[in-house]
Image (tube, rainbow, N blue to C red; front, side, top):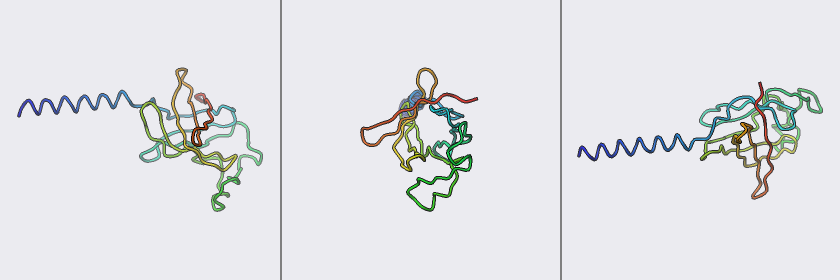
Length: 141
């Protein structure tokens, strides 16, 4: 009986350490988009991570009060882009974060993967089936 308990403790310690090793690098913080037109802040949204536009570096065509006019849901077209959560439901999956990205320029949402590359940049990948588009964002001060 005593050996069984020791075995269970050792097994649970192993599973805890394996989980810690497999966790992806933190992506929380402020990021400058690849086009250098906005700052996105990523942080906790309940049990998942989300990202919102917190600053325009280049104002959109209709200024800083630009609305989500391309949204397919008419009820959402009046919301401002500034402060909009467009990275949603990101959960750790191996060494990456998987969730959804909304593109306010097209009004479309895509499956997305986020992770840090070896240079510390945030890789942002949005995909439809096997077709993906990737951007690399840099840490913002």
